[in-house]
Structure formats: structure tokens, C-alpha cells
Image (cartoon, rainbow, N blue to C red; front, side, top):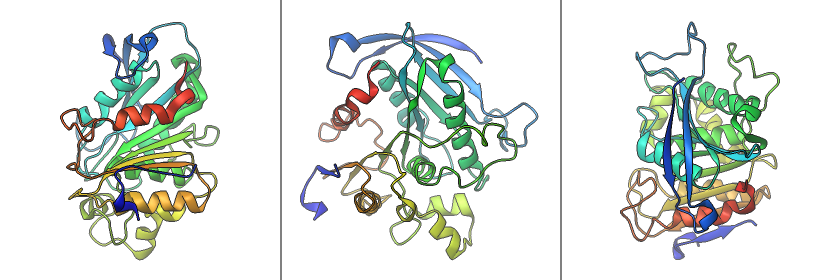
Length: 300
């Protein structure tokens, strides 16, 4: 059924400044001056600072200058198979896109291989809690914080969206009082399942060479969608050669089953890892479709 259409909707600490050019149609939102701030997720002495020097987990926040105090926010998780991070075209470019709408955006640098679970997850939920706990300082509405992920970053995002209490790191002093659940989730060509249609490299990098059946089930996120899962937007391409489009179908079908609002957009052609797809005329309008889906939720 799904492959017969190209687009389908289902269910109903250094600061710099830059200029973000809008990708959105309204003149009001055509340009913003943006402050860029890095925040480390863990203390200097933390064991969670990763195994590679100079790459400690952090978020870089892109905050439009101005007086608005109740902006929507989006945390972006780059992909990379849990082995590296495509932080530019699946991170920074999207953060600037969201900032161009007047949203606050943040790009997550999370631990990857040789770090295994729970490292990436602990970084992701910690970042969500920091954004929510410091909402007033960032000019953010704490009830409008979304989470976006591409590829394996989409697996991380969908894990947090469906299982926000899966693991609480002993060093996360916000875990007992601040929710990590996003209010919206956006998934670009995501790894969803650790079953038949999975991306083997992501499984190995997250769980090791010999994951148990219970682990594979735990991280097949289509199995953990519930009525508490936030509204979802998913886009994928039918000929993705790295992460099969069935991953998107599985999550969308689970959302429909549990009456979670979901929009699924499948494009006929497009290689894996396209990010904003700026060089692909067939695919690059996905950000316009996303802007429409966000609607008033993103308004200042």
C-alpha cells in the first residue's frame, strides 16, 4: 500500500552570533540574528565525558535574538550509525533552519562507538532535561520541546520518544524531577527496528557483537509506541540502500495502532543521508512539508 504513493499522511561556553536565512515563506520570519552557545552535558570530572579527547557530550544552542520568552525548541540528533556523527548536514544545517523560523534549536553531540548503550541514550535524555530545566534562560516554552533525529540519530530520538524512562544515569541530577519526553518527534530516514529490516552497523555499535534477543526487542522502537508517544513526522525514500524504508512504515503503523498523530512522507528516490536534500529537487521540499506540519506549534 505504501509504495504506491510518494507522500502519505497517516493519523490524523562560548557565544557567537550569526545570521540565519529563512527557509520559510513568511516575510516576518525571513531573518534572525542568532546566538550560538555550547553547553557541556556532564561535569568536568564525569565518567560520561567519552573516550575520545575533545569530543565530550554537549549541545550547541542556536537562539534567535529578541524578547520572545516562549519559543518552541528542537533538539537535533545527527546520524552516523552510532559510530560517528554527521553533525553538519544532519545537525547544524537543521538547527539554523529551525532558528530561521524563530525557534530555539540545539545540536546534540553524543557518545558513539566504542561507547555502547547506555552512553548515547544517557546523553540524549540529559540534553532534553537540560533544555527543559533551563527553558526560562533559553527563552523556551517547556511544553514545546521537540526531538529530531536522522538515521541512527533517528533511532536515538525514537528510543527517547517511546521509552523516556528506559535508563537513568546516576550522574543525571535532573532525572528524578525533569521529564525527557519530547512534545514532538521528527524522524529522517530513521533506524527504528533491530529486527528484520535493521541497520546492522547501528546494532553492533550500540549493543556489541552478540546482543541478546531481549536487547533486540528492547531497541525495536516500533514495539514501544504507546498513547504517550508524542506526535510524529517521518520522511524516508523508497530506494534507501542503507536503512530500508520499512523502518518508517513500522513506526508509522505502530502510531496508527495506538492513535498517535503521525505524518509519513515517502519519496520515490533519494540516497541515504541526504539531510536537508538541498541538491535534490525531488526531495528538498520535505522541509516545507515539515514546516506545515509544525504549524502553530512552532509560533513565537
